[in-house]
Length: 123
Length: 123
Image (cartoon, rainbow over all chains, first blue to last red; front, side, top):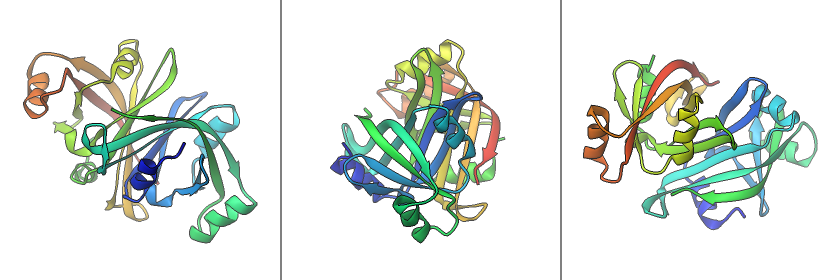
């Protein structure tokens, strides 16, 4: 699911933007590629500082979408690869995922655990 | 509206992701910072290759949101600045905006003209 090109993208710094949906409509937020911790085949850990609206939307049942992309990775049309990831997330403020994030980032209040269920390479 | 820091961000390559909303829910797509042409105080031109769902959503009344960010520009908390832009867009397949895009990118079928009405610096 989280293929080789996605792992290559994450080695290049850049914004990793994501979107959820809730009572106030579409909500976009972002982290940095370098902050994302890939766990196994289909899970991304994201450190949570703010993200209060993202959390509210997710806990009200919103799915999450994220775009990961880098001009420095080869895509369909030569330079530049990008992927749209869709799935569901949970916010964890204790346990192993939280501890992993907290050990890297003092400011985290939770780990966002993003289970990716669909990956599409962008043209 | 499109301040100095945003113009600095656009000088660094990276994905510029945007979201609209329509009958199929939230739709994310992206361009590259280097492809965006800033016109005046509040307008961004974006070259359109695919973007069929984005166009359909916008022409059905969706607003558009975009995140522009770079770790190489100073933000609120030291390195890394990011902005959430909201506004409305139009797709133009002729005229001056289209010609500008077409002269840079042979593959464009339209210019997306994004009028930014709200800018928020991300913490």
